[in-house]
Image (cartoon, rainbow, N blue to C red; front, side, top):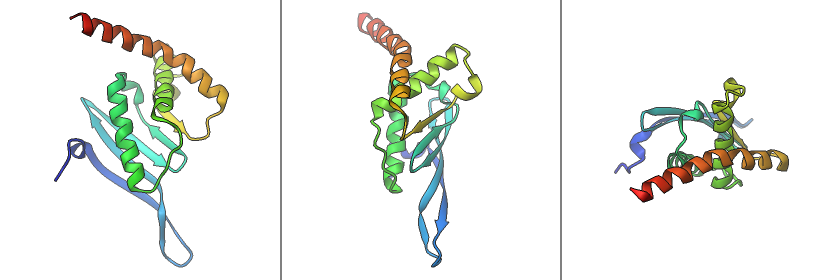
Length: 147
């Protein structure tokens, strides 16, 4: 039986390594598409990175969490384990969105690469830049609570 999010998964394309003995090794690259609202996101997963193309389209925190939950589910199914927290990924994604909205290197900031080995300095920058989007979320929540 299909779950709520299963209908949003189009396909998962696996790129695998073949061992010398001819056996298939765990997939090294997974490519999938996730539909959220009117946006289709191409997602590429490797053991050390998650690439979300056109991530700038998703600005809502709950939508980001839904996409990341899907990514973590797929990663688990294929044996990929990521150590960074979902909150850390959301901060990086939000930082990219902030830079994109500021028209800073749109060709680079329009998509996000959630690398496992980000430096402490980059993580600090992501935290700071994500505040701009997080303030917007809090303002929207405050308006909803007033209504």
